[in-house]
Image (cartoon, rainbow, N blue to C red; front, top):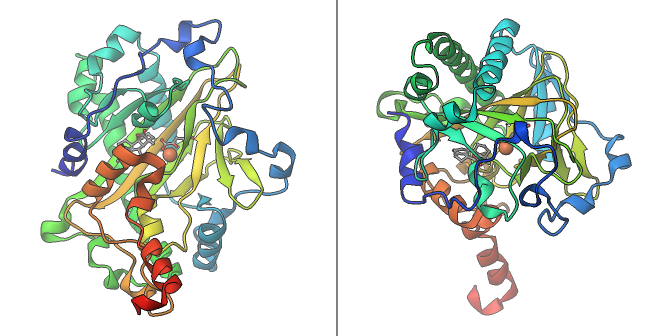
Length: 369
Ligand SMILES: C=C1C[C@]23C[C@H]1CC[C@H]2[C@@]12CCC[C@@](C)(C(=O)O1)[C@H]2[C@@H]3C(=O)O
Ligand SMILES: O=C(O)CCC(=O)C(=O)O
Ligand SMILES: [Fe+2]
């Protein structure tokens, strides 16, 4: 089952439940548990609100003959881009958004019937990364791995078919789009899909890792002090994100620009480069540091397709990108192992598999060579 890679990783790294699930729709004053200080949110003060308006995240037309080159540019400067002309039917995106709204508007006691267990991956609950922060995020989530049936039947015992059909159709559509994007991104790195056999998994590699994450951000009484989803990078190859017609997603530019808001563009989907693509590209493609902020009046929803590798594949810098001038920056690792490391070290996860220190030391120390 494709779910095994994900559930295995978390069975050994249960979630630390230091946050209580709160029904945010009934809260009128921001509780202390949800009030983020700049200390709790270490990247918050660095955002240059005005500067960010001068920079905007690229919107790439997938039918553009220069799409590959534009993707290369977006991946080396942003680690994120929006795509249009992606062929995902608009009505399917609308339907999946409606399905998410229907789910999150259920009463809390009903949603908790499908609650994610501490060592599980699917179901309703807070984002997994919550345990790394002392404050709670102003959001709720629902994670689907493989078939949504088991959890949907707990939410709507008599009427789960529509939800399941929509989710399954969307998963299929995202799977196809993800392989198309993989072709383009690998192409932009100068590598063909034939060079990387597991990209189109066949036979025993058929079991690819993927999940669908629904995030809900209710209106917030004090949005400046709250945090919808704390800053993180995604532990995947890439994510394909749809946001409802309300901004909230921000991407961090490390080169002094700070947090940049990604404005919703009608019909566009957002591609976020994850940690594993950063590893594959030997560090040249940025794994975007991003977060979601909230607002006072509008409910915001995001639907995120998480695209990972098959469980048995060890991923390291692509051999075509490594030579004596470009030594490998990371050691090869399976997704399962990486998720375990991430669950333990969070934003230090890549550092723990980095080979760069070793190389630097070797350069510094004449006696080594
Ligand atoms: C395969 C993944 C990737 C996970 C963990 C695991 C299952 C759930 C994913 C998310 C989904 C919500 C944001 C995030 C940051 C979170 O808290 O849970 C993601 C995280 C990651 O990208 O690291
Ligand atoms: O809601 C968003 O825009 C961000 C969600 C996100 O980063 C995630 O699910 O990984
Ligand atoms: Fe993310």
